[in-house]
Image (cartoon, rainbow, N blue to C red):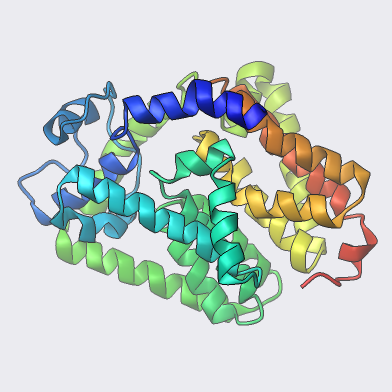
Length: 348
Protein backbone atom coordinates (compact mmCIF):
# COMPACT_ATOMS: atom_id res chain seq x y z
CA UNK A 1 0.00 0.00 0.00
CA UNK A 2 2.80 2.42 0.90
CA UNK A 3 4.64 1.71 -2.35
CA UNK A 4 1.45 2.01 -4.40
CA UNK A 5 0.41 5.31 -2.83
CA UNK A 6 3.84 6.94 -2.97
CA UNK A 7 4.61 5.84 -6.51
CA UNK A 8 1.08 6.40 -7.82
CA UNK A 9 0.67 9.89 -6.36
CA UNK A 10 4.21 11.26 -6.51
CA UNK A 11 7.06 9.43 -8.23
CA UNK A 12 5.39 8.07 -11.39
CA UNK A 13 3.55 11.36 -12.22
CA UNK A 14 6.80 13.34 -11.89
CA UNK A 15 8.78 10.87 -13.99
CA UNK A 16 6.03 10.91 -16.62
CA UNK A 17 5.75 14.70 -16.68
CA UNK A 18 9.49 15.37 -16.76
CA UNK A 19 11.10 12.26 -18.28
CA UNK A 20 14.25 14.10 -19.42
CA UNK A 21 14.89 15.88 -16.12
CA UNK A 22 17.54 13.53 -14.82
CA UNK A 23 20.96 14.41 -13.43
CA UNK A 24 22.63 12.56 -16.26
CA UNK A 25 21.71 15.56 -18.45
CA UNK A 26 24.39 17.72 -16.84
CA UNK A 27 26.98 14.98 -17.37
CA UNK A 28 25.93 14.65 -21.00
CA UNK A 29 26.63 18.38 -21.37
CA UNK A 30 29.99 18.04 -19.66
CA UNK A 31 31.04 15.00 -21.67
CA UNK A 32 30.24 16.81 -24.93
CA UNK A 33 32.40 19.72 -23.76
CA UNK A 34 35.32 17.34 -23.22
CA UNK A 35 35.29 16.70 -26.98
CA UNK A 36 34.02 20.02 -28.33
CA UNK A 37 36.27 22.61 -26.70
CA UNK A 38 34.20 25.51 -27.98
CA UNK A 39 31.46 24.43 -25.57
CA UNK A 40 31.58 25.54 -21.94
CA UNK A 41 32.55 22.72 -19.59
CA UNK A 42 30.53 23.99 -16.62
CA UNK A 43 27.78 26.26 -17.98
CA UNK A 44 24.76 27.58 -16.10
CA UNK A 45 22.53 24.53 -16.36
CA UNK A 46 19.19 26.17 -17.13
CA UNK A 47 20.50 27.59 -20.41
CA UNK A 48 22.46 24.43 -21.24
CA UNK A 49 19.40 22.27 -20.60
CA UNK A 50 17.34 24.40 -22.99
CA UNK A 51 19.75 23.49 -25.79
CA UNK A 52 18.95 19.83 -25.09
CA UNK A 53 15.22 20.51 -25.17
CA UNK A 54 14.91 20.17 -21.41
CA UNK A 55 12.91 22.70 -19.37
CA UNK A 56 14.52 22.61 -15.97
CA UNK A 57 15.12 25.64 -13.76
CA UNK A 58 18.64 25.08 -12.43
CA UNK A 59 20.44 28.41 -12.25
CA UNK A 60 23.72 26.93 -11.13
CA UNK A 61 26.62 24.96 -12.54
CA UNK A 62 27.12 21.23 -12.25
CA UNK A 63 28.93 20.09 -9.11
CA UNK A 64 29.95 16.78 -10.69
CA UNK A 65 33.69 16.20 -11.21
CA UNK A 66 34.99 15.89 -14.78
CA UNK A 67 35.89 12.25 -14.07
CA UNK A 68 32.14 11.59 -14.00
CA UNK A 69 31.86 12.88 -17.56
CA UNK A 70 34.12 10.07 -18.77
CA UNK A 71 31.37 7.52 -18.14
CA UNK A 72 29.00 9.40 -20.43
CA UNK A 73 31.44 9.98 -23.30
CA UNK A 74 30.18 7.04 -25.46
CA UNK A 75 26.62 8.39 -25.22
CA UNK A 76 27.54 11.68 -26.89
CA UNK A 77 27.23 9.76 -30.17
CA UNK A 78 23.45 9.98 -29.64
CA UNK A 79 21.00 12.79 -28.99
CA UNK A 80 20.17 13.38 -25.35
CA UNK A 81 16.81 11.54 -25.15
CA UNK A 82 18.39 8.43 -26.69
CA UNK A 83 21.45 8.76 -24.48
CA UNK A 84 19.25 8.96 -21.38
CA UNK A 85 17.35 5.80 -22.32
CA UNK A 86 20.61 3.93 -22.84
CA UNK A 87 21.96 5.24 -19.53
CA UNK A 88 18.85 4.12 -17.62
CA UNK A 89 19.15 0.64 -19.11
CA UNK A 90 22.85 0.44 -18.24
CA UNK A 91 22.16 1.55 -14.66
CA UNK A 92 19.47 -1.11 -14.37
CA UNK A 93 22.01 -3.68 -15.56
CA UNK A 94 24.24 -2.33 -12.77
CA UNK A 95 21.51 -3.18 -10.27
CA UNK A 96 21.24 -6.70 -11.68
CA UNK A 97 25.02 -7.17 -11.53
CA UNK A 98 25.00 -5.87 -7.95
CA UNK A 99 22.62 -8.67 -6.99
CA UNK A 100 24.93 -11.12 -8.76
CA UNK A 101 27.71 -10.37 -6.24
CA UNK A 102 25.58 -12.22 -3.68
CA UNK A 103 25.71 -15.39 -5.78
CA UNK A 104 22.08 -15.26 -6.86
CA UNK A 105 21.02 -16.95 -10.08
CA UNK A 106 20.64 -14.66 -13.09
CA UNK A 107 16.87 -15.08 -12.91
CA UNK A 108 16.82 -14.01 -9.26
CA UNK A 109 19.22 -11.16 -10.03
CA UNK A 110 16.78 -9.84 -12.60
CA UNK A 111 13.91 -10.17 -10.12
CA UNK A 112 15.99 -8.41 -7.45
CA UNK A 113 16.78 -5.58 -9.87
CA UNK A 114 13.11 -5.08 -10.68
CA UNK A 115 12.03 -5.28 -7.04
CA UNK A 116 14.71 -2.79 -5.98
CA UNK A 117 12.97 -0.17 -8.13
CA UNK A 118 10.17 -0.18 -5.55
CA UNK A 119 12.54 1.71 -3.21
CA UNK A 120 12.58 5.47 -4.00
CA UNK A 121 16.38 5.88 -3.83
CA UNK A 122 16.73 3.16 -6.48
CA UNK A 123 14.30 4.45 -9.07
CA UNK A 124 15.78 7.96 -8.84
CA UNK A 125 19.25 6.46 -9.21
CA UNK A 126 18.53 5.28 -12.75
CA UNK A 127 19.32 8.79 -14.00
CA UNK A 128 22.33 9.14 -11.72
CA UNK A 129 25.70 7.53 -10.91
CA UNK A 130 24.76 5.80 -7.66
CA UNK A 131 24.34 2.32 -9.25
CA UNK A 132 28.03 2.56 -10.21
CA UNK A 133 28.84 3.40 -6.59
CA UNK A 134 26.70 0.48 -5.42
CA UNK A 135 28.12 -2.08 -7.84
CA UNK A 136 31.72 -0.91 -7.46
CA UNK A 137 31.66 -1.33 -3.68
CA UNK A 138 29.82 -4.65 -3.81
CA UNK A 139 32.37 -5.93 -6.31
CA UNK A 140 35.19 -4.71 -4.10
CA UNK A 141 33.61 -6.52 -1.15
CA UNK A 142 33.34 -9.66 -3.27
CA UNK A 143 37.07 -9.32 -4.05
CA UNK A 144 38.13 -8.27 -0.56
CA UNK A 145 40.67 -11.10 -0.55
CA UNK A 146 42.11 -9.78 -3.82
CA UNK A 147 43.22 -6.25 -2.83
CA UNK A 148 44.37 -5.10 -6.26
CA UNK A 149 40.99 -5.86 -7.86
CA UNK A 150 39.22 -4.44 -4.82
CA UNK A 151 41.17 -1.19 -5.12
CA UNK A 152 40.33 -0.93 -8.81
CA UNK A 153 36.61 -1.46 -8.08
CA UNK A 154 36.58 1.23 -5.39
CA UNK A 155 38.40 3.62 -7.70
CA UNK A 156 35.87 3.13 -10.50
CA UNK A 157 33.05 3.72 -8.00
CA UNK A 158 34.74 6.90 -6.75
CA UNK A 159 35.38 8.49 -10.15
CA UNK A 160 31.84 9.90 -10.34
CA UNK A 161 31.23 9.84 -6.58
CA UNK A 162 34.29 10.72 -4.51
CA UNK A 163 32.76 9.40 -1.30
CA UNK A 164 32.88 5.80 -2.41
CA UNK A 165 36.59 6.08 -1.58
CA UNK A 166 36.33 5.61 2.24
CA UNK A 167 35.78 1.88 1.59
CA UNK A 168 39.49 1.80 0.72
CA UNK A 169 40.14 2.06 4.47
CA UNK A 170 39.09 -1.58 4.77
CA UNK A 171 42.28 -2.56 2.94
CA UNK A 172 44.53 0.16 4.33
CA UNK A 173 43.96 -0.75 7.99
CA UNK A 174 44.80 -4.34 7.06
CA UNK A 175 47.96 -3.17 5.25
CA UNK A 176 46.84 -4.63 1.94
CA UNK A 177 48.70 -2.03 -0.07
CA UNK A 178 47.90 -3.55 -3.46
CA UNK A 179 44.41 -2.07 -3.08
CA UNK A 180 45.96 1.38 -2.88
CA UNK A 181 48.04 0.62 -5.97
CA UNK A 182 44.97 -0.43 -7.97
CA UNK A 183 43.03 2.61 -6.75
CA UNK A 184 45.84 5.01 -7.67
CA UNK A 185 46.36 3.51 -11.12
CA UNK A 186 42.70 3.96 -12.07
CA UNK A 187 42.64 7.56 -10.90
CA UNK A 188 45.93 8.33 -12.62
CA UNK A 189 44.63 6.87 -15.88
CA UNK A 190 41.39 8.88 -15.58
CA UNK A 191 43.27 12.15 -15.02
CA UNK A 192 45.57 11.44 -17.98
CA UNK A 193 42.57 10.76 -20.25
CA UNK A 194 40.98 14.01 -19.08
CA UNK A 195 44.17 15.94 -19.78
CA UNK A 196 44.39 14.45 -23.28
CA UNK A 197 40.74 15.25 -24.05
CA UNK A 198 40.67 18.70 -22.48
CA UNK A 199 43.74 19.97 -20.62
CA UNK A 200 41.76 22.57 -18.64
CA UNK A 201 39.13 20.11 -17.35
CA UNK A 202 40.49 19.66 -13.83
CA UNK A 203 41.55 23.29 -13.37
CA UNK A 204 38.15 24.53 -14.58
CA UNK A 205 36.37 22.22 -12.15
CA UNK A 206 38.51 23.38 -9.23
CA UNK A 207 38.20 27.07 -10.03
CA UNK A 208 34.44 27.11 -10.60
CA UNK A 209 33.26 24.62 -8.00
CA UNK A 210 34.54 26.21 -4.82
CA UNK A 211 31.79 28.83 -4.80
CA UNK A 212 29.33 26.58 -6.65
CA UNK A 213 29.71 23.72 -4.18
CA UNK A 214 29.19 26.05 -1.22
CA UNK A 215 25.94 27.32 -2.74
CA UNK A 216 24.78 23.74 -3.33
CA UNK A 217 25.66 22.74 0.22
CA UNK A 218 23.60 25.67 1.53
CA UNK A 219 20.50 24.63 -0.39
CA UNK A 220 17.58 24.02 2.01
CA UNK A 221 16.79 20.72 0.27
CA UNK A 222 20.28 19.33 0.90
CA UNK A 223 19.89 16.28 3.12
CA UNK A 224 23.57 15.71 4.01
CA UNK A 225 24.00 14.53 7.60
CA UNK A 226 26.63 17.03 8.76
CA UNK A 227 24.91 19.93 7.02
CA UNK A 228 21.53 19.04 8.55
CA UNK A 229 23.12 18.57 11.98
CA UNK A 230 24.61 22.06 11.76
CA UNK A 231 21.39 23.56 10.41
CA UNK A 232 19.25 22.21 13.26
CA UNK A 233 21.75 22.00 16.11
CA UNK A 234 24.58 24.43 15.37
CA UNK A 235 27.88 23.35 16.94
CA UNK A 236 26.19 20.91 19.33
CA UNK A 237 24.39 19.12 16.50
CA UNK A 238 27.49 19.11 14.29
CA UNK A 239 29.71 17.78 17.09
CA UNK A 240 27.18 15.08 17.96
CA UNK A 241 27.04 13.99 14.33
CA UNK A 242 30.85 13.85 14.13
CA UNK A 243 31.04 11.73 17.30
CA UNK A 244 28.41 9.38 15.89
CA UNK A 245 30.31 9.07 12.61
CA UNK A 246 33.53 8.30 14.49
CA UNK A 247 31.70 5.63 16.50
CA UNK A 248 30.49 3.89 13.34
CA UNK A 249 33.96 4.25 11.80
CA UNK A 250 35.53 2.61 14.87
CA UNK A 251 32.99 -0.19 14.61
CA UNK A 252 34.02 -0.67 11.00
CA UNK A 253 37.69 -0.80 11.94
CA UNK A 254 37.29 -3.43 14.65
CA UNK A 255 34.96 -5.75 12.72
CA UNK A 256 35.83 -8.00 9.81
CA UNK A 257 33.79 -9.03 6.80
CA UNK A 258 30.16 -7.89 6.61
CA UNK A 259 29.82 -5.26 9.35
CA UNK A 260 33.30 -3.84 8.85
CA UNK A 261 32.60 -3.26 5.17
CA UNK A 262 29.03 -2.04 5.66
CA UNK A 263 30.20 0.61 8.15
CA UNK A 264 32.70 1.99 5.62
CA UNK A 265 30.02 2.11 2.92
CA UNK A 266 27.85 3.98 5.41
CA UNK A 267 30.76 6.31 6.21
CA UNK A 268 30.94 7.52 2.61
CA UNK A 269 27.25 8.42 2.64
CA UNK A 270 27.44 10.05 6.08
CA UNK A 271 30.32 12.29 4.93
CA UNK A 272 28.58 13.53 1.78
CA UNK A 273 28.46 17.34 1.76
CA UNK A 274 25.46 17.21 -0.61
CA UNK A 275 22.94 14.36 -0.34
CA UNK A 276 19.65 13.54 -2.04
CA UNK A 277 17.35 10.58 -1.65
CA UNK A 278 19.22 8.59 -4.33
CA UNK A 279 22.42 9.00 -2.29
CA UNK A 280 21.04 6.30 0.01
CA UNK A 281 21.16 3.56 -2.66
CA UNK A 282 24.52 2.01 -1.60
CA UNK A 283 22.95 1.19 1.78
CA UNK A 284 20.25 -1.05 0.29
CA UNK A 285 21.98 -4.48 0.29
CA UNK A 286 23.45 -3.95 3.75
CA UNK A 287 20.08 -2.97 5.22
CA UNK A 288 18.45 -6.01 3.63
CA UNK A 289 21.12 -8.36 4.94
CA UNK A 290 20.84 -6.79 8.39
CA UNK A 291 17.12 -7.59 8.37
CA UNK A 292 17.75 -11.14 7.17
CA UNK A 293 20.67 -11.97 9.44
CA UNK A 294 20.10 -10.23 12.78
CA UNK A 295 17.74 -10.11 15.72
CA UNK A 296 14.91 -7.71 16.53
CA UNK A 297 16.93 -4.60 17.49
CA UNK A 298 19.06 -3.97 14.41
CA UNK A 299 16.32 -5.44 12.22
CA UNK A 300 13.87 -2.81 13.51
CA UNK A 301 16.21 0.10 12.74
CA UNK A 302 17.12 -1.32 9.34
CA UNK A 303 13.41 -1.60 8.55
CA UNK A 304 12.82 2.01 9.59
CA UNK A 305 15.75 3.07 7.36
CA UNK A 306 14.11 1.27 4.43
CA UNK A 307 10.73 2.90 5.09
CA UNK A 308 11.81 6.51 5.67
CA UNK A 309 12.62 7.25 1.99
CA UNK A 310 8.93 6.75 1.20
CA UNK A 311 8.34 9.93 3.21
CA UNK A 312 10.87 11.78 1.05
CA UNK A 313 10.12 10.16 -2.31
CA UNK A 314 11.45 13.02 -4.47
CA UNK A 315 15.03 14.37 -4.14
CA UNK A 316 13.81 17.83 -3.08
CA UNK A 317 11.24 16.70 -0.47
CA UNK A 318 11.80 16.75 3.34
CA UNK A 319 15.58 16.72 3.16
CA UNK A 320 15.99 16.22 6.91
CA UNK A 321 14.53 12.72 6.55
CA UNK A 322 17.52 11.74 4.46
CA UNK A 323 19.78 12.59 7.39
CA UNK A 324 17.53 10.70 9.77
CA UNK A 325 17.70 7.68 7.46
CA UNK A 326 21.50 7.84 7.53
CA UNK A 327 21.48 8.03 11.34
CA UNK A 328 19.01 5.15 11.74
CA UNK A 329 21.06 3.05 9.31
CA UNK A 330 24.17 3.73 11.37
CA UNK A 331 22.38 2.71 14.58
CA UNK A 332 21.28 -0.50 12.88
CA UNK A 333 24.88 -1.33 11.94
CA UNK A 334 26.14 -0.51 15.43
CA UNK A 335 23.59 -2.85 16.96
CA UNK A 336 24.24 -5.54 14.38
CA UNK A 337 27.95 -5.45 15.18
CA UNK A 338 27.10 -7.03 18.53
CA UNK A 339 25.42 -10.02 16.88
CA UNK A 340 27.40 -13.27 17.40
CA UNK A 341 27.08 -14.21 13.72
CA UNK A 342 29.13 -11.16 12.78
CA UNK A 343 31.51 -11.23 15.72
CA UNK A 344 32.52 -14.78 14.79
CA UNK A 345 33.00 -13.74 11.17
CA UNK A 346 30.75 -16.50 9.85
CA UNK A 347 29.28 -14.30 7.18
CA UNK A 348 30.79 -14.64 3.72
